[in-house]
Length: 617
Image (cartoon, rainbow, N blue to C red; front, side):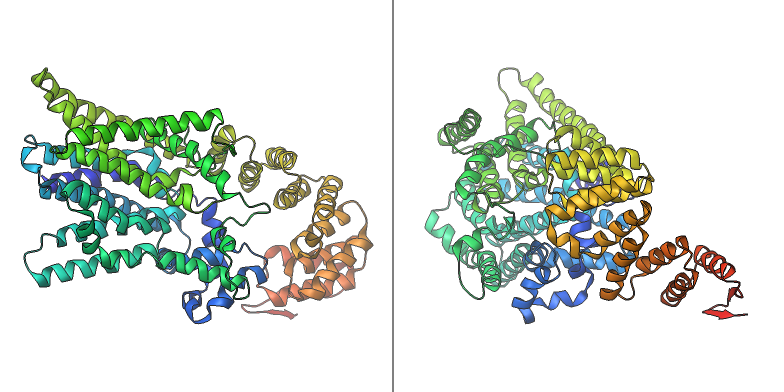
């Protein structure tokens, strides 16, 4: 039966995700990998030898400090990404193939873990026939088919979540196997392996922090173990708990000149202009957790970049309603568990709800995150809810009122749910097919987030539709006038549309709002193109020369100043810059044509090219 389920899981996972492997990279794929100099440099993995320097490296490079924080806290995940990168560059195919394999293995591990827990439970002997297979199989197939998983499979960078879950499940599976090992040496081997995988998991994503806690709680709830004994058994795992808080503290101290500040540690990733107050974050997360539950049970409104209102008081109506729903669910499952402790399904259902709340607590309470909500944060917590749902379906399957109907109805409902979820996953993956389709979907659901419109504008621009891109960038700036990247991209799109005056106005306004932009070569270069486009050639030349004083090998600046010199009939100066470009890069036909035309204007002999360099005929 296990073999059949494994084949079913792999087949279902492949049918849902294999056709997405060549979809483009998106969003944080670029921030944390493609455009991340720390990721591309293999020496970054030596950061422990230069911890303080590395923790402050992004700030010195005018990059987001989270690039270093993320790398320090998740080196195992980055190592897996780096192996992909070494194998085939940034081709998304093999990144996603690995993600698919991880997702399929996670589903199989859910079956293995639940089967083990049910089989080893002291009250498993009272379980109806077939339940020990039906419950784990249903939970595993619901997990593999659910559309919420797309953000941890199709979205490449969220391997953080799926790989962390892999280590989480392996840790628990090995740990609970060790409790029933036949020999002391076998037990030692299993527990050592569990400990090693726990450390690897904690260095993959912070959510794995809760694995030792869940090991204790599951031992108490399903095995009936006394708390003191459960704590003693799990002591090696529990001793790993300070690992992540310790790393976060060290990062915060490295950025504060060696001084310890608790607020800095708590806000280590909450690095925005006005960090979210921790209490307000917790209050808001009550509504977010309720929304996560709703999306697990009824997956609608999935969104790459959700917008969510910040709540300030417990007495706000949305907070009270969400809290009432969460308390009702918890109290109901607890009440059933109290009444039927001799039924492993009641114990497992209660443990599933506890799993959900414990695993979601990292992102929804302990540490404030700048994004209030993200679908991928449900990947690990959802396992507990699927286990609970599987237990409810099994109770229906063994309902004594109409046993013949119930025995057929429950598996039928399970198949219907898995089929419906699979269809929704395919529809959700279709949204990821192109950058435009993904960000149009996101903009429809999050119309008030400036970065959503900025990303949609970039998608249109990359596709060559600068007219639509301009509309999106302007909408982004209406929401957030200080959005420098939107201003920069707007300026460039306007240039490509032949509207230099508007481009210059957009770039000038950006510099007015952010004085530092005036020192950024790419921004200054765009200003120079705008000045040239409106006929202010002398000013344009001065701008390009300022860039070349700082970056003598700036190829585009050389080309641009040469173009302006040609416009003003200063062909000798133009030729000098074209020749500099020819020395800096292998010449292409456009560059050769520019050189020939410039030399013709000077009545000079034309250049020809051999296999390696330019030479005079």
